Image (cartoon, rainbow, N blue to C red):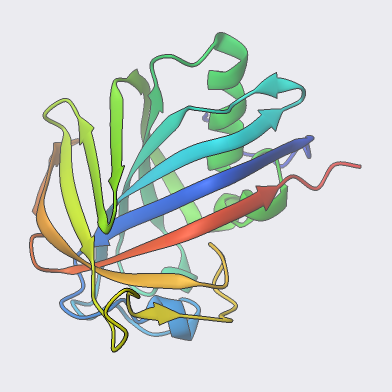
Length: 211
């Protein structure tokens, strides 16, 4: 994962990304596209990605989970991200390598911007990435390193959560607003607690740029 020169590959992922961050109110990055500072001046976050359908150069990725630890010192759009990746221990060698290329930006396409935004990849490892999707709840457990639970925020219509729609956000156009229920990170010298803080959920449909 250290080589982050872009080498476009054929890949595609459909599924869901959810996260919990250090912002006290809903993340301003969604509507400002990373131009507005996070509410605390920095962004500390974990992300969970569920791949419902996907492939990398013909290798099946369906059913795999990924966790990310993200440390951004200021505005998201200004870069200098420090990131650690936790790849599902069930992944084959080819799938593991492909996922690291995708999430480092090296494979180009939707995540290609990571090569510009991420200044340091502080770690990459196989791990038991447990993800639970239960109604309005999302849970991620990666041993004792990341233990997070978030819940969608209810909207005016009782059966619908608060949602930002038709955005130009890099993850996807429709972002569901959520809130951290209990959420702790303990790895790479980071000890974070995002309980009660901003969270979001987004359906993803990403792909590579190789012809």
